[in-house]
Length: 300
Image (cartoon, rainbow, N blue to C red; front, side):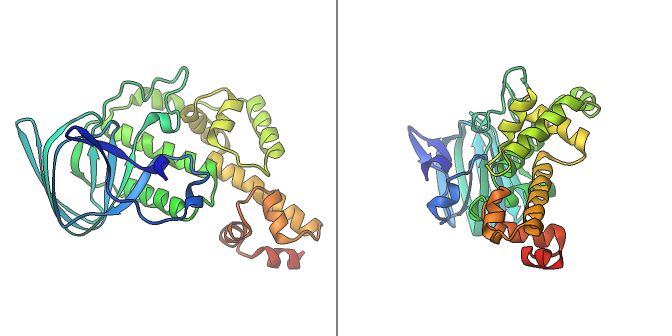
């Protein structure tokens, strides 16, 4: 599972951040989101000359920590409790770090733009942008994003590429807005922008044709001729829901049609509508439609 490990430099060598939690190899078979790990923290440890190549955002998921970090001539002492977050700038060396912890577990995500190709032709929003590090801060929305992202990995990525891509991009944008000073004027202009009717028709045709496949955010953005970030903003402005929610709605429409017009097994219906499994289809049915697939079929 090396492709989901987060590597940093310590002294003259490379080291893996934390310790990967246990999950099955197939859990990451289709994961396309940002690299994310959850690990338990030793009760006390010291590191020297620590550098992360990309920014890392860490949530203290449980427990308590006390740390003393030295950046050049500056010492930073921090006390953290569960739900506190930390942001470490990429390329910024920590000369000395000493940690004491109690029952601590952390969730860390690496903001590597190349992971989701966040920097695309014509979109320089994330290019050459240095995030301002913060040793301790509170952000309930970001904490929810990190836990949701981790649960999706641990759950075998059941909601698919589009969900993973959208959540990862949303997390990256949220962090860059807070620590990277993203331009507000451009965001205000985009708040009024929408897809054309022709773009929307083309996208719906594409979704309908490929509904039984794994559809990713990059696929939809490519069909619209936009970067992933701009596509997500314009699509939501136009339709009133996210690309993931829209595709999920289309999947449910097809599944309901197949349930009520054919005698195909529920497992076949789930796959024909693009759900990752029968259990995922059943979970979505109960959550969105308030009934199991069998109950929906019996009512018809």
